[in-house]
Amino acid sequence: MNKLLQQIHQLHQSVEKEWRAAQSAADCTDQIEPALDTLFNDVSKLAQRFPLHLKHNIYKKEFAAFCPINGEEIFYELILESEDEMVMVESINETIEHMEDVVCSDLGAALVGYHEDVADFLYQELGYKQTLSAVHHGVHIKTVRG
Image (cartoon, helix red, strand yellow):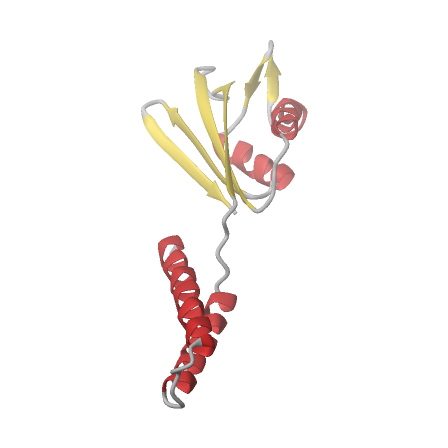
């Protein structure tokens, strides 16, 4: 989809360039100018309807927790994606630290919790599009929120 949006905006720029050249050309006929006007207006409307998001931020955080069933250590990878906004790294880290008090029980200095509960909590606290991945007892689990 993003490639299509880029193509729409490139087409818009090309049509605009031709449209401006035709307006300034002395030999612009009455037949060509209306066609370029219509094409330019149609492409402009399309480009406005589907704006191109040039900012896409991706944050990746790894952390560990213990399985609440057998205490096996599980390594998580959180990928957080935002459009047009910056997410403070400190906010991500603080949310994971705060998760100990809300979702997970404390086993020494480590987190203990169910994968889906962890994903729900992180989405509730941080928002944005999130993918949380881990391997539990040989099963790859990926939860997507947002």
